[in-house]
Amino acid sequence: MWQDDRLPSQNGWMCPRLRLAVTAFNGASGVYGRRENTPMQTALVYDSDVEKEKADQFLRDMRKYLSETISAQEVAQWIKAGQQVNEGLFLDRFVLHHIADFLRGRLSLDQDFARKAFLTESQLMRDQHLSGPKSPASKKKYLFTKAWSDPAHTVKAWWEPNHMKGQTAQSCPDWAFREPCPSVVFEAKLFRSGAIDHARTELVNGIYQCFYYRAHPKTGETSTHPAWDYDYACLFVYDASEKHSVVTAWKTINENVRKACWDSANVFVMVLPD
Image 1: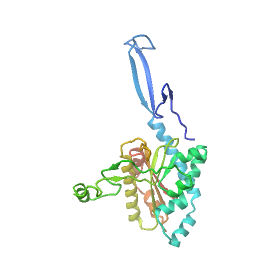
Image 2 (image 1 turned 90 degrees about the vertical axis):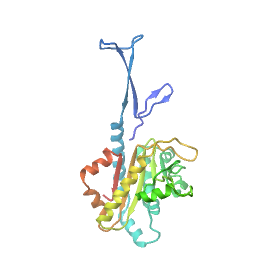
Image 3 (image 1 turned 90 degrees about the horizontal axis):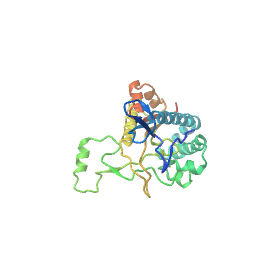
Image 4 (image 1 turned 180 degrees about the horizontal axis):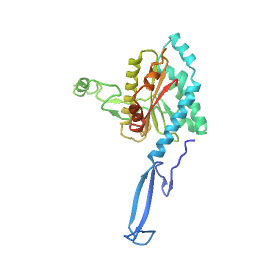
């Protein structure tokens, strides 16, 4: 279970990842203790490694759950039918309701608490009260978009006389988790077909997009938008291609790149079916 280990204080709760270690040090004698007129040494201890291990296990558990509950056969039949196949419909039909079930089971929370921890772009999920009432879209607009861009396009936009035309962009991730879950923002991809080179490109694009989300400064909640304060990002890719090109691309990526995604960038890559 993802446990809330915040510390009680006089004014409420401390940040779950911050401990204030206060030590009274008696001059140069090396004797520790609280004494009148004794200078205090304070040290901030940041439990990032502990929290990150919990987040990693949480996402691994979710990957396992989704791998067991999303039917590859049903996805293939749906794609073959060819009626309005896109990522949004795919998530509504095959993914998001399973995530809602996972949160209720994983956290042992009632539906109301699980719903508040789960923000989605899906209007269907919000209408069915399976996710929170707000979308995870950012309140602020940013200088760049999540897509790779030729600098010439950015130059043109920034000096465009029409100041309403694309100089800044809002971020709209597919879904996000908040307390009591780990704080994670998600970018989702449905890979329907393509050879290994295409799959590699999709992975690079998706990881870059997660890295882009992680670069946003933290902002507070408003009446219309949730706070943007995510510690981690996750790329979710469902590989429905005949030769499982994305699965192969991810399994054969250089190991130092794979490790850097999580260890250095706090980006978890989830490729299904595994």
